[in-house]
Length: 174
Image (cartoon, rainbow, N blue to C red; front, side, top):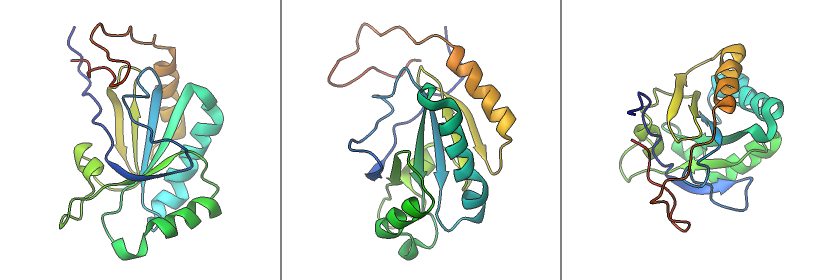
């Protein structure tokens, strides 16, 4: 059966914070994943997006994997990894946060482009099968996000594909 939901592209991250590993969507297949794309100098990110991601982490615990994606498309010199590390500490962000990669000469970060994000804050929800089920820009109502997540948590985990390789992962379902 063909899904109407697009496959989630892999994240292009240059550095991770708040995790010992390097999370990939392939490794998180079977989990419901929330990605909060933000910039630390974005007022909406600080006042709404990141607090919402923290509430999701607190409310859903291990039922949802929350990832932050620092997607800088302006003020590049001010938003360095050193500044981000201090920001994460000061705002008590404990979920893993990746720095969205850039191609030289292009201001739009790679993952931001892959997901067609319109700006920050943006919230992306990925189901257990690795499909994008919500891709929203700006302030999103908590009740709506909670309802989406509850439905996805209740969906069964996908069966492993016959051509999954334990060292590489599984192909994105069509």
